[in-house]
Length: 59
Image (cartoon, rainbow, N blue to C red):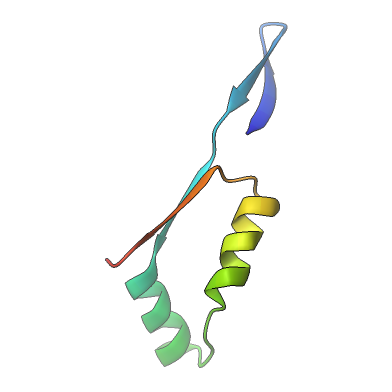
C-alpha cells in the first residue's frame, strides 16, 4: 500500500499489476530474443512497486 496525504490526513492506496502474459511472451521471445523470469518479475512488482496483487492473464 502507498500512503499519500489528502486534506491533511494520511490515506492509503492499493496498487495492482495486470500482466498480459501471452503478448509479453510473444514480444520478448520472438521479437527481442530473450525470455522473462516470471518469479523475478513477480518479486520486483511486489517489492519495488509495492503491488498488493499481481494478476497474470493469458490474453
